[in-house]
Length: 242
Image 1 (tube, rainbow, N blue to C red):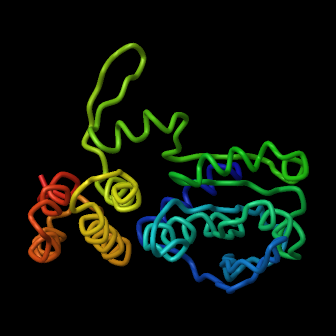
Image 2 (spheres, rainbow, N blue to C red; image 1 turned 45 degrees about the vertical axis):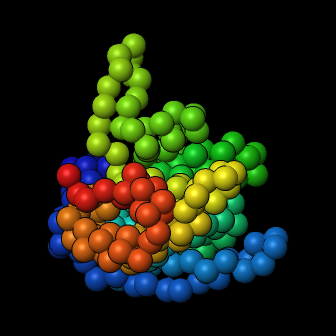
């Protein structure tokens, strides 16, 4: 069995709850404009010649501590790789490549959601590229207009066809929460935006998918204190699940 197949098996076993013992270390990466916190993970039974992975999370309140992100990072580390999930890829890659546990020059970069585009941009930097063996992006975007269209409506165009999928409401809550107050003369915008951001923060802390009915009670609680014009906006972006 080759190394790639063995690594894939370890990842799958760990993802489904059979993770080996892990060593987790809180670290600080020194960036040009100041320190950035991160997490270094490796299997407890290995401490030399590990391939390294830098993992960048998307726009989520818990950041690198999001349950799904922690689960992914531990599964990835179980394959024999060492991982850091921090918001500054260039500093992380260079620092990771200097760790004694990591095989020099064997660094991979992974980005999720908003982080996927950032990972691709970082990989184009000549100073970074020479340290990378591979770059992966999950759920990234190419066109911001198309991204917002899908985020709000679920409509997208692919291979000459118009399609529709239910979009994750989490991104819609964050986008509306930040952008509604910028719309001139929109009554109730500030109130609705504050409620939407509170809902998004709660969803981020819970770590469950935003379309889960578990959030319906909080939606009702948040909208109950809103003025009528704010309720209309809130209901537009955060209707009950389903």
